Length: 108
Image 1 (cartoon, one colour):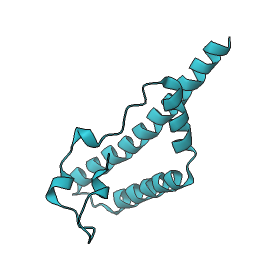
Image 2: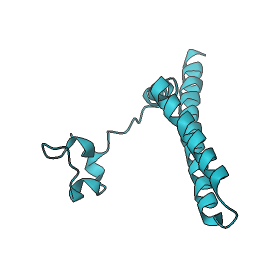
Image 3: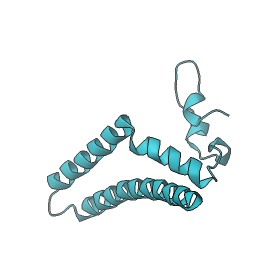
Image 4: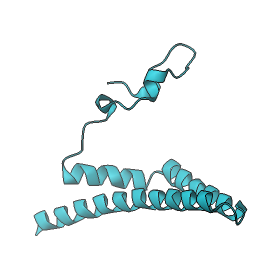
């Protein structure tokens, strides 16, 4: 399987077909609670992802503070972006917690 960003011509140009969602490009689901928890743990401890999330939060806050009173729609967009970022983080934390609970149940 190839990811959309891996397909392209020799000049690394993105073709219109690559911008379309294709469910076949999705990775196999991590149906096992333990495997999903381990993957979430790796992501939550990944310094590159942590830095990207930190910079995104800072960018959103900076953009928010730079808006004028007339830019209510842009502030609302930034609000949703910030909450989406937090939802991703919380979902990863929930996956990790579910795996830990499952491991504790099995150990008991």
